[in-house]
Image (cartoon, rainbow, N blue to C red):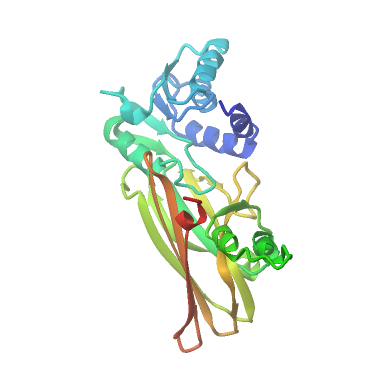
Length: 312
């Protein structure tokens, strides 16, 4: 059991407060029924009970369900009922006024939140009920600092007249969890653009694709792209993994290029990102970069794929 992972969740006060405040806005004391999907150690479900929920159903399929059971008992949480299975496996589930699910990753969709909440809306949620989070927006920005790209290309400097270019290419066909500063990003991060948005519960497309482009005011070298997300939990309550947002246990992702692109002023660069996620196959990511000249003609194109970064 990865109890240390759950410790990082419990220590994330920004995350905890955001989910607490989102539930506080919709729970009516003594009336509201809540379903907590992916309950982990039971923290969010317990918060719902403390906020006055009449009943709380906690769904958890992993081993940590045993910890949740003990935690609920220790807290004398009579309103809480632990259901040790995945919510999608539950036959004829009880209906809830609020479905809450903190099944978000550094890549927002890596824990299959789209499929989970599409099923929840259909089978777990009462008519007119509320889903938390409601929406996810995904952002991308060009990385103009070489510090992460240099870290990934150490294969070039091993010496001894040994060529490790194959391993270098595999390294660059991977996605990395990193923390960016404003100086790492084009225009200090203000260049970030939304490439995808998901309305949870009603959007059923677990395969996502989007793009963004930038025309540069000054010459810069692009080493890859930074990724982050923003979740609207409820009206007025958001949670973000952006570099300038309050720090959480999540970080940003780095999508590197195979070769840096030297982009002159007036030229542009385009990033196309794609993903597909499923419980059976996990998450697959791909990204493409295109460098255009001032007239809009393509100067260079690179296509990266996470699958190429793994040894078969």
